[in-house]
Length: 414
Image (cartoon, rainbow, N blue to C red; front, top):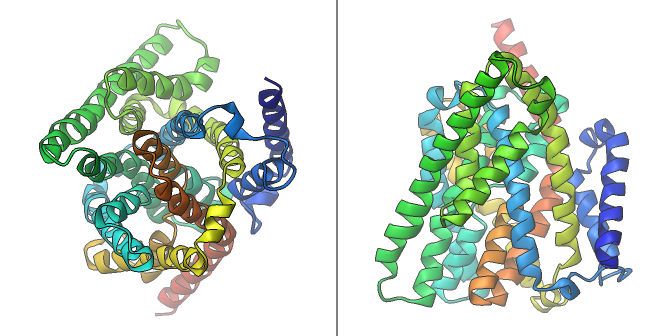
């Protein structure tokens, strides 16, 4: 209990302090996940040893629950942030990014694991699938907020946001396939198609849309007949996200994908005023959940295991950051007509951070199989991505804005 109080106090203090300097952080080389991660490292066994999450119980169970709550809030915030007409106008772009983009990232990540570590192909595929989804939590620090709106055009911000939100849940079947093949090879494909693909993923989307659409309609109805006050809007996205997550977890469906589907369906129903109200509170709610999860992650980083990897630790981080996503996006470039400029492809290709979604799938894998190598390699890559993408977020956004301004100047002089 004492550890929990201390963790709560330190995390709340960090949220408070970063709130005071929020605009400064948004325009600096640091990001909130980096600062939160640093606090976790300092408080944990590696430095001050004030908090040891291993004493609280199985750390993978704690991370599993914390990640689900954090991802749910991030997905709901993203769903309300994306314009209502985006999916209809950009369905081809997002279909290509989600289907071919995910398969490409998974294939390249799997190959890199094999080349660097020489693991069994199924273990390589499992780690590759775990680090495939781009993270909406880390992505939101780059593409949301006033600074991002000033520097990055909507076509790029919304493309990154939608993809990172949707592929979190869509990665579930990718992760479950090697898990099933490792645990029970006989009948694995049939079980994979019936459960992770049809019931958990397909059912998650369907139930999420139904619950979200119904909740949105009820909210509008209650507003129209004056049964609720404006303040209820502050809790709508939070309560809807957790309701969908809880209900779908009970019926063993894909709660993460269901949350995004519910938020997107609800947003289609809300009128303009309600939509604006939602957008104003999303950043605050995201920050409240983003900071604690990275503090927790910082507490359990396996430093000694990373050290034992030697130079392979550096090689795999650099290789994944450079070759997991960028080659895939450039290969798909001719088909991504809604991202017409080379600078668009650079931004979308680079800002596919690996974060909380990967931590969630690592925790899930660890609890199901106990495969420690998945945690060691996966956590190392998440750590590297958090640092590198956090440090490059604002500088790259400024550089992109400069490219845009130069392009406009050239067009005007023609």
